[in-house]
Length: 157
Image (cartoon, rainbow, N blue to C red; front, top):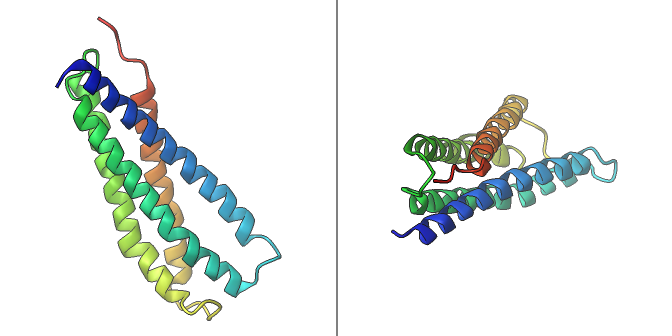
């Protein structure tokens, strides 16, 4: 691949990582405001979670996919060391695995627990809810670290 294609690949990776960190932060801020609002009862909060979280995971997956594609295209870019490139790819693949695992083993069981909305919380709900907060924080932190590494200027030759 030629250098302009590699440069576009790095730009896409930088954009997608940064976009995901920003989107996830906005999602959390907005979500906390909604679920702590007195305007919603338990059923309303359940509806919010069932409506908002699937697009959250889709957005994360799409942006992680764009990041991986961009990094693959950027491989060999002048000034982007193999070590830095590999670190970015590993962080992104790890973050992708974390968000997939969160969706499959944390969010999906939580969604079943709040369906139908407003039903009483079964045993284990709180544990899964805290696990979700922790796993999502780890996933976004991995992406933030990768975004900082990706956005750090590459050395020119």
